[in-house]
Image (cartoon, rainbow, N blue to C red; front, side, top):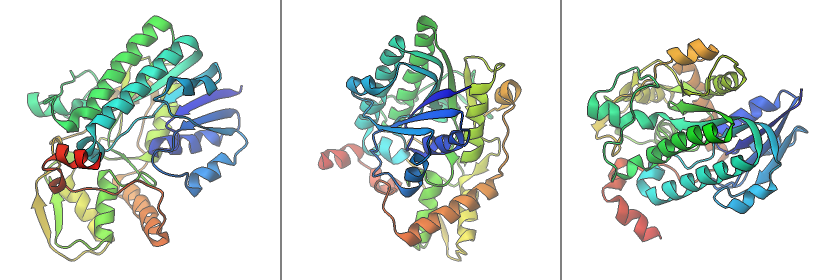
Length: 351
């Protein structure tokens, strides 16, 4: 049976790896959609587009007219398109809200008029942050926990606000308009080709640039990092599962680890012998994050095949190769917490 699969945000981090994985099955006919806002298509993505069962459409999903170029019938939609990254939320929260909200609403308007059997909406563990920090929410965190934004005026929560909107919108639209939707809350997915606005690429780049002494931002904060291959296989199993209901599921790892340990693990790969200095965390970042995976394991047999060390080594090797080739395919690199002392002045000056 030929499956017509539509992927929004296909040239992004998770989108690319998902597209690459699904394209291996020749019965899958993929339509990949992105606006390439992160830069020009790199060689990895161009190689993917050479496959006969892959088609690419460069579309700006913030504009309703872009949806006219899509066909009316698809078996599955993976809705992964959004602006993400701590640096993005702190430097341009207005863009986070504008772009993510428009994509969500435009996609739902399109779904009302077109036949798509199954939909996946990509959400985030950021939605748990307020509940964990303000009300001592449970760790590991189950999907059933109430969602809270601790400070609605803080730019850091602009991303979570759009994802909470998306969860509510997709679930309620699906009930009215008759399509099945599964919501995934991703927890710190990492791996090759993820840009530079996330924790592990931040660290690799800073060590590569010989930062010394090396600052550890929020050393006692914890995260549970999940390698990209496990996340991709997990969401494919979820969408193919007849047992998994149209509900919300965590995707991640249960291996909770301190930021200090992650930093020093990467430092060891660089054979760093310098001094480490403790520093304040990024503004608005949560103290702990670790998903409860019982529901995902029960409903679609989710599992992690890569341990943290294996994933970090693969990611490390990719980024070192990237730096040596000196290719420029991603947006501006990371910014440190010190650069966000007055976030609004920062981005007003660039407008």
